[in-house]
Length: 178
Ligand code: IMP
Ligand code: MG
Image (cartoon, rainbow, N blue to C red; front, side):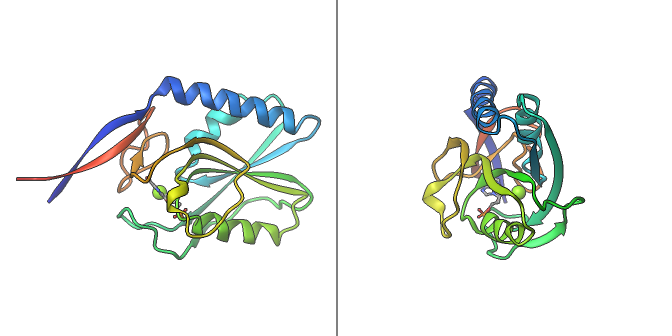
């Protein structure tokens, strides 16, 4: 049986510093507007809270949940809607907040769906990006960190639903148990 260990990849301090920078940029770009944040559950929730706290423009929020991974580390390629938004996004300036973009399948599906609902503008903000893994091209407007093709946890990201609560980003190393 494989047992995993987690090594710190991006420290809590680095994460906070970067989120402040991205929040400043977003606040400048949406000056005079109300920004509607859409959090993709569950992974995006830590990042969205930290980001939202630092935005200086008026903000509203909604949440949706989709699933593309099971208990493993490979994207299934199909995206299932688990929880839809509570409110209409018609005519609103929408920013989708995601934990990580890997193959791009999840976000591609999600953005196509949201576009059909008539937002005034639709942009994407991701905490992490693994560009080497991209299968479908998705337009990413704001990225905190680009990372190599490794499996990471923490700051909302899970392995088998664990480690979401780590205050840093950690790389998962799988060890064979002897
Ligand atoms: P995509 O559809 O392949 O882009 O997958 C995106 C989703 O896969 C993310 O929202 C995460 O839930 C999950 N995911 C991708 N890479 C990782 C990782 O390194 N750690 C934890 N979850 C990941
Ligand atoms: Mg996940």
